Length: 602
Ligand code: M6R
Image 1 (cartoon, helix red, strand yellow):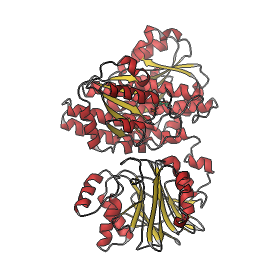
Image 2 (cartoon, rainbow, N blue to C red):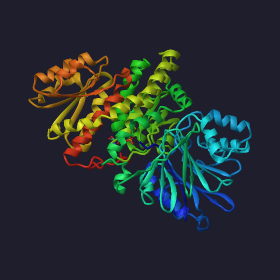
Image 3 (tube, helix red, strand yellow):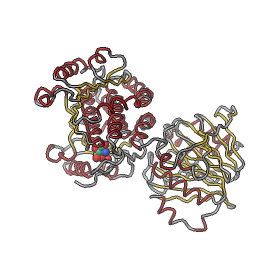
Image 4 (cartoon, rainbow, N blue to C red):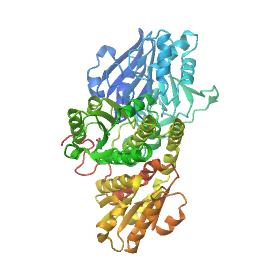
C-alpha cells in the first residue's frame, strides 16, 4: 500500500477531539496547508477548519468545541482549489447534517458539480470533494441510509477516493469507502479508528485492517462490518503490526527516500488525472516563442521536456537553468516561460519567472505545491499531485514533473496541429498504462543492492546517454553525488571523445542509460569506446536486449515503453542505485549534508 495526497482520520472513542488532533499531527507529513475536524454532538455536526498547520489549529480551538465521541479529521495538501479555510475539509451538504473527509482526486467533479448546482445545491468551496456530501444528501433525501448513500455517490464518482463520512441522522457510526487511495481501520480496546496510514493508529492499536479496493466499511463503537461496493460481505482480516513509530512513519521503509521511490506508481497515476482543461489552457498559452526553466532536478525535467517538445510537437523550446535565466535570455516579449519547481519556492526559479514577467512573458507554473509562490506568480499553473516529499532528494516529484510535461507536450502538439486527435487519444491511452510499467520497475529495485555494493567504493562515475535520455543521465549523476558524495558527472555520451574520455582507465564506472529508443545504436558505439579503455559498464536497458546484456558488466532491465516515456522508467533504477550506494557508504540518504529541501536563497 502506498500513500497519496492528504491525510484522513476518524474515530469512535471517548474524547474524540483529542484523538483526532493527535492523529492529524501524525498525518501532517501527508499535507499541511489546512486542517479541519467534524464532531457529532447533541446539536448535530460541528465543523471547525482553518488554513495552516495543525499546531496553530489546535492552539486556536475553543474549549467549547472539544466534546464528542464520533469525529472526522483531515489534513490537506491542495489539489483542487487554493489552500484556504473554505477549501479545507471536512465538507458538508446543504443541510450541514452530513460531513465528509476525502483523500484522492475526483476526475469528473466539474460535470457532477454542474448537475448538482442545477438541482439547487449550494457549494461553499472550490474543491472536488464537496460533490460527495451533496451527492450523499440526494441519496438520503430519496430514503437511503448513510452507507447506501455513500455507495450510491461512489458509483457516480470517477477517480480515487478514501472517504469517511458521518451523518447527524446516524450518529453512532462512520462510513468509509476506499477506491485507490489508502485506508486503514484500527480496532482498539477503547475505540475504533480509520486513517490514511498505519502510524497514526499505532498509539491506539496495533491490530489493523488494510481496507481492500472498492470496499465500504461501517464503523461502530462495538466493531466494523465490510462489504464490496457491489454489496458482497467481506470478512475483516486484522494484521498485527510490530513496527516502531519511526519505521511506521516511513511506511516500514528504512528511509523516506525509499518510501518515496516506492510511491511513484500512485504518484504518477494521480498526476495523470490532471484536469484536461488546465492542460489545454496551458498548451494554448505556449504560443510562439517559449522557454522552460527550473533548478536541479526540476531543470532536468525541463531538459527532458525540451527534447519532447522538439520530437513530438515540432517546437523548439529551450531549457535554461533558472540561476542563469536572466543572463541567457533577452527577448521575452510575447513569449511563454514554463517554470518548473517542486516546492514552488526556489528563489532562483521565482527570480527567473519574475524577470520573465517584467520582460513581457506569460508564465506557466508546474509545481507540486498549491498555494506556493509559483502558483501566485503564474498566469496558469499545473499541480503535479505527488503529495509531500520528505527526502531531500527529489524522486517521486521528478517522475510526476515528467508526466505533467509529457501531457503538456501532447496537448501543445495537438493545439499546433503536429499530431492528430487520434494520435493524441493514443498517447493518452499509452500514458495511462505507465503506472503499471513503473510498478514493475519499482518491484525490482531491490535487485540493485548488489550492484550498488560492488561499485560503492569507486571514486568517480560517468552517467551517459543520448537524445531523450541525456537529462535522465544528468539526473542519475545528481542523485548519486548529492546523497552518496561519490563524484559523478552526467553528459551526452557523444561528448566523451571531446574531453572526458581522457579520465577513463581500468575499472572506471560508466553508467549508460541505453533503452531501445532511437539513440540506442549510437549509444552502443559510445559504450564500446569506454569499454575499450577498461571502463566498467552498468547499463539501463530494455527487457531482453541481449546485445547490451553481453556488453555490460551489470545491467538493469526496464519494460518496453513508448520512446517519450523511457526517461520515466529509466530514472527509477538510477534513484535506487544512488540510494543503495549512499546506504552502503554509511550515509543517511534523507539528509544529505549542505542541502535543503527548498532552496530559498539566490
Ligand atoms: O523545489 P524545486 O523543484 O524548485 O527544487 C529545485 C532543486 O533544488 C531540487 O530539484 C534539487 O535539485 C533536488 N532536491 C535534488 O534531488
